[in-house]
Image (cartoon, rainbow, N blue to C red; front, side, top):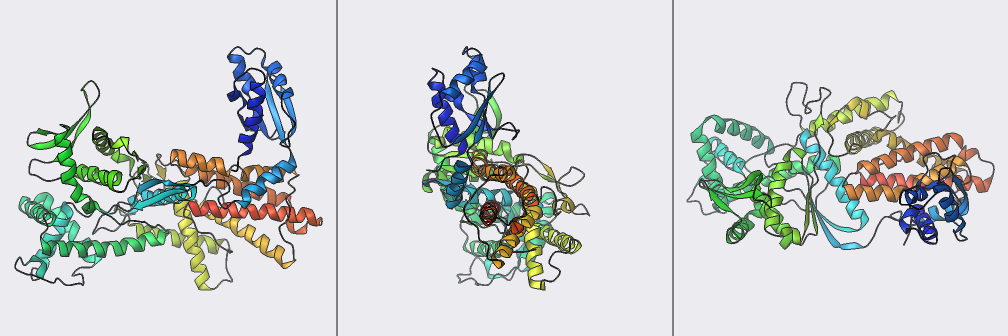
Length: 588
């Protein structure tokens, strides 16, 4: 098993502290923030002093004198009042990097295939185009599924469509008014129903808002929609056949938009798939006296150990018999726990749904689902415009996701032309570059922020080729590929590593921080840790490149070492960007 330098050092110093009758834990080491003082630092003597170990400087000297002979440390300095500064041996550093680079996951992956992680993200609704509000769940959820799968988990992602609510009744009634002659509305029709859909996504997008608006002001229309929904859920054949068309047409459009983002799902299940489990959970909740009747409705009170209400109850069924959204979510969780046998379920959903998930999870806890599975609301903040309010179109409407992607492509084309990138390329390659730059712009701009934070969407700023942006990282990858291509033209190949100069060492240490960045990303379900590492790595390479004239290096051994370091850096950048869902370019 590959171990990090921090681990190896902490083991050495931990045993040295133990040799002085002090806790092994005092041996923990960290990267030194000032490279001129050392590569790593151990501050355990200071912590030991607070627990009565005496003078920290004396303790540090004793600990250093207790270190065994090793190939890891080049030099150690004890600095008052008790810091231990550590310099790493170059040969050990090179060997460590080569061993990590030889591993396809750079020392990150484990065999966790027996641990099933289900990730619920996307959550689009049938009959509605995705809008900018769907951007974060798609980008964050997809990155997390890639990262968890890369780590070695058995990952299953689910789009979890909104396909079973009152909006279905609205669509049925809306279409009935427009095309009453269709066989789906004839209760005497015995089938078979047409295989071709009677509606397009454009039809659905017209019908739904009209019917939704009507139902808000017209009680009769609302009652018809409610009744149609109930008949659908009770299995009326014509309505089920029509509903299948609604879902099929919607999924085709959703796959187009997700495809442009490079986002995929293992499952395209919907709320409807949880329907068979609703009677099961309602029965269990009743038998365990968890649910109660309240003014005709069926609810689960959410109380603390003292019986005090801590939040509004989870409403399972309204007084008119209608099943609520929370009931469907609880049934879905039940399916994932007991049918899918998930060890962990992550819900990558907007932070404004926090109370909803607290209610659902509280009910699940009362049913002891938490004895089987960890379920978690992996929530995120909103995408805001420059005015600090949720991002809209210029006319104040909700921007469709497809339109946002096109805007990003237009901005990418403009930036590429202004920078004179790819002027001699054919149109097909220019379009490929513009597409990848656009997607990198959208994804990195989102993922670089801690997911729970809101952020201001600034397309012009995020699409720059300088600064902490996706296009900047793509440019650095293309630069390294160009260096390696030119090296091949002069018969120069990557060879043995000899990281001796300060900037070579700096790049080597940065590469070896990948594992820690990945561990934090998984622990916090927060891809911004990986983004930060990749950006810092790209900057470190840029500094290295400016100081080392790689292709002009006359010492052949030195040149092959520099090329090897560049090659490893390229592999890690491409690996990390792929985990963010960002495709790289061969050239720009």
